[in-house]
Image (tube, rainbow, N blue to C red):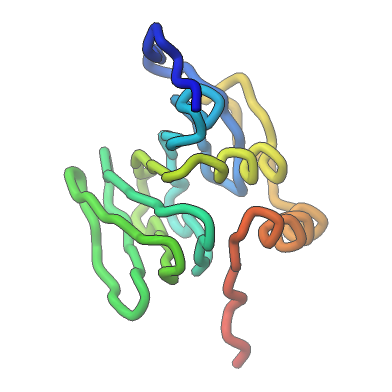
Length: 163
């Protein structure tokens, strides 16, 4: 395990960024920086429906710290509203999701331990060098790619219940 002996510094607005649907994921550090111990990303969650579908990780624990806004979280059967300053931890195997139901963007930090989730986002997301660009639309082929790639990274995405 090799960790950068000089430490890691990322200035505001810096990191490796990807659009994942309408949300912007900016990785402040990735597994290659931390000896695969963890990855940390800042996520700007789009208003009125941005966020994730219900899913579980079989490889990593996922922790969330809400910086701005209000997000609805699900952890297994528990539903709660998380506002600025709220910390949540979802251990591997736990069903979870978050959704921005407000009219303004929300911002949170996501830690994954061990690292690896960043590789999934890099494979299925759309790389960007600008936080000011508009989110690209999610095409049916993008969604198919996400669903087909998720198992490779130990992620199970739970489809919506049919009515």
